[in-house]
Image (cartoon, rainbow, N blue to C red; front, side, top):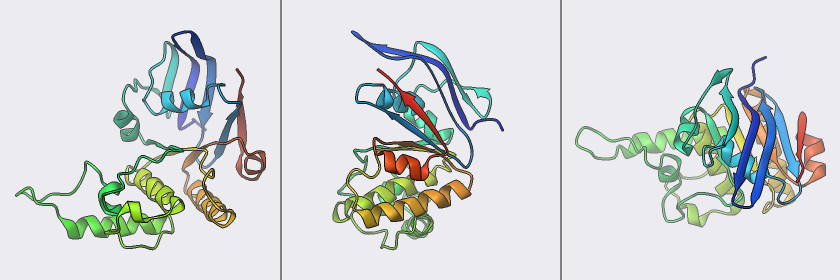
Length: 216
């Protein structure tokens, strides 16, 4: 099976620091591939290379076997690669619906937002992640777990093939973690490839089909 995403021989350095040196990483459809390592081992850098935030000096990036040149996060999203960062990237003053389709609100020919269509599409996405709430709700009124689900729903709005989750349980209660694991299982069954970044070994054992360890 051809990997959904394949990074081969990736080298990346910053002034005075060699963050990644010849790193290989891939994720296949319907699997959870865990990425682990101590602080400073390069996990965040690897995520950001995959997401188009950082470029790299050597190596190759392939999506479904085809070489690509990802230089911007929007390019990665357009290719179906989404990241849910530990520090969520939501606009708290906007509604759930406006966050889900930020920068992509549907307009009519007169330039007016088609609110009915926006809310209908938002409800469908929220249902996919098991979140029952009014899409008009301000994101700032939601708890961390619900905000995280909004981020995952936003990834699905881009028809994400691969979702990278960066320490997703760091601010969740045990019950919220259980719900997240159920969602991960559903996404996996749909053929989504998941990259799970965590330092919690019990979660890695419970979820991961494969594990890659980065070392400093």
